Image 1 (tube, rainbow, N blue to C red):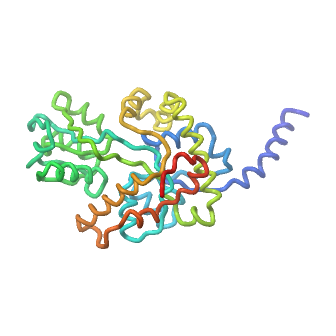
Image 2: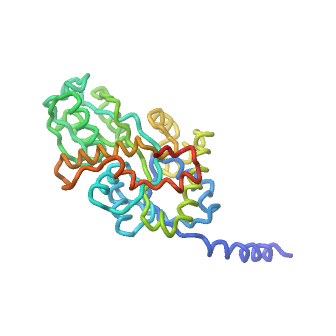
Image 3: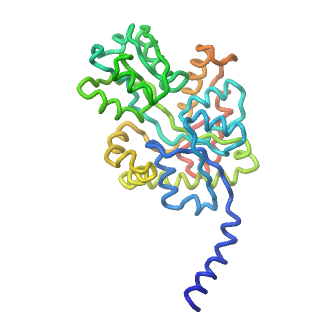
Length: 320
């Protein structure tokens, strides 16, 4: 048999497999905190699971979540706040996994405007953040815990560091992606205030169809991520290389190693996430952005669908 005949035979054998692949639309953008996705892509785990993944990029997790609610995507990746809002507004969705937790949230200060060494010293300061997001929640928690008030100024994520450098703001609470830019831009005027307590959860949410009629497809998806999760734990350096490659070098493996000192990577789904979502739902109501009734933990848990993760990695699920 000639080489060309061999290739033709191989193509003929593979064609039925490709045709039978289950399609899944996933709202995800390369980022530093979800290495399981990068590793699954690099190692072909989605294809092995019989999936044909279409990746759709959105500027924010909220936009990805809204696209899923609107039926445009099957699964979305996001920080956790949109899920809290979705529960308040009666949307139909399911939280199916928690990929990683960022533990290094911070307030960044321009010391040219004056040093800040404790949350109490934020009183009266002009602090920039992105309104309605998890970093806004974190800032409000800090101020409430310290019992002080500040002038909170809303701005888009890319605008915060330039405003701080110009002196328009005394401090900012940006998303972690901009920490490095703040440090390099401010130089000797850079200072940070880390206040523990809040962790950003990078979660996955799915449409009702995925947890219903298409549950087998969702199980295959989560199984691929669980396999990649084990790889990340076994070889973090290789995972950093995969993430850096998918980000097209925007973050080097060395920069990722530094960031990951503040990232708890690992698939899980537990009541700690539900409790955080309840607290964030209360916060959203307090802002008057959404009208409705408070959500209890039991009500929030009705939006959790652990079955697919539980099948792939039983030890990752800790729910009543």
